Length: 91
Picture 1 (tube, one colour):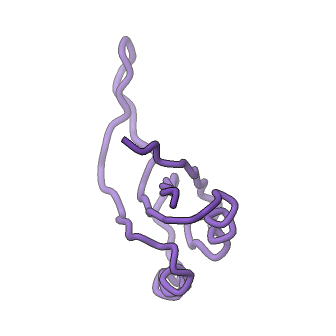
Picture 2: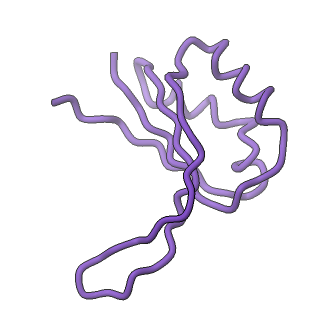
Picture 3: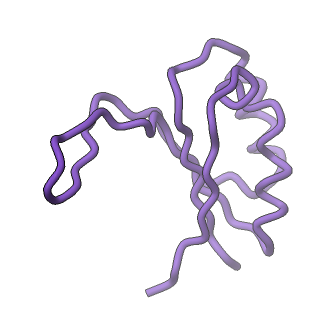
């Protein structure tokens, strides 16, 4: 089954993360994740900048659309943060 990563970008949002995580666990697709701390964005020839990614989650699903449906209720998303969904490429 394909694996997906949800990257969350934006400032940490208050909200009901417990209910949201419970929803994800109930879906059977959630494989964990974490908040992320201070970081830098690095590109050759550019001054280091601040990193926008503030957290990630992992999922198993047949299609990316199944994971996209789980975004609703994400406190960061609901507060105006952005989400990027990516399929992991198997080794």
